[in-house]
Length: 268
Ligand code: ADP
Image 1 (cartoon, rainbow, N blue to C red):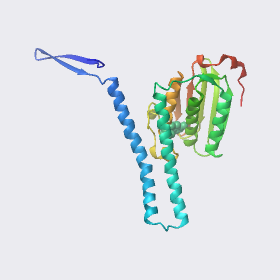
Image 2 (spheres, protein in one colour; image 1 turned 90 degrees about the vertical axis):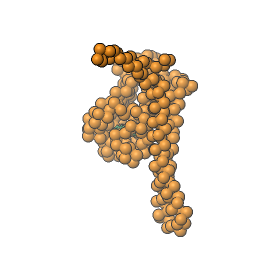
Image 3 (cartoon, protein in one colour; image 1 turned 90 degrees about the horizontal axis):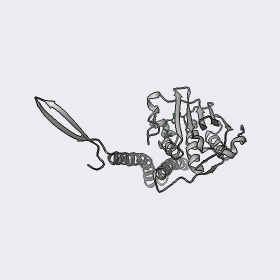
Image 4 (spheres, rainbow, N blue to C red; image 1 turned 120 degrees about the vertical axis):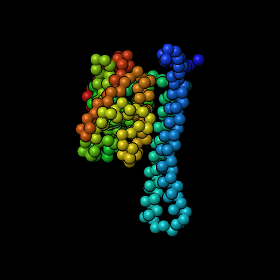
């Protein structure tokens, strides 16, 4: 049968041979299942903030004379939930674009200093001085998609802030290794237990749902990272020790290097 992997089992039974024919789930069945899961998860994620917003709107209609302080606190909570929905929709659109064959990566020269300086600034702004954050750049520019890499590196750095308690350290590094350039984000945060590590890049997979939501996480960040890296022939390695911290290591192939910048790597 087209597209189907048939499995034929010949089972001897009471001197007769029985033939059992079954089939493996096809690639299209698997994709369809993933699509359904994605829609179900996304709807569930959108329902919670919508319920909160609708609840406060009902209160506002039923009690139009609420005092200014209460009303302001309701508006703030609604704005938070609105932001959560916006983050989710933006991450879903990014992921859909990254998966689409109609959206090819247009490789260009990625100015690593400019890109990582911006990521450092964004990370510091998100941390608001609660962490000790540093950046070290000692490697060449590469060929790739600047915006896609901004999104991937930004997600890793944002996670480091989200999952590292106050006064923790976050180290961003860009280095040229023998196998190729490497970007690492090392934090002294809450860490991840080994059984979760292989599932982290699945859409909506979170170790602790409530913590991720508190920090405005969508559960799609590492899925986006995975897809961006796939498009760059790069890989992600995760090392972590619970309660001590994590290191997310992105390895690019040597062919990604812009050879003319090799001698320009400097420390920041
Ligand atoms: P989220 O939006 O929930 O952060 P991600 O896809 O970015 O979603 O990450 C998936 C999960 O991986 C997170 O919910 C968190 O449990 C875990 N995680 C990611 N980065 C870190 C980190 N630096 N330290 C500890 N846990 C992390």
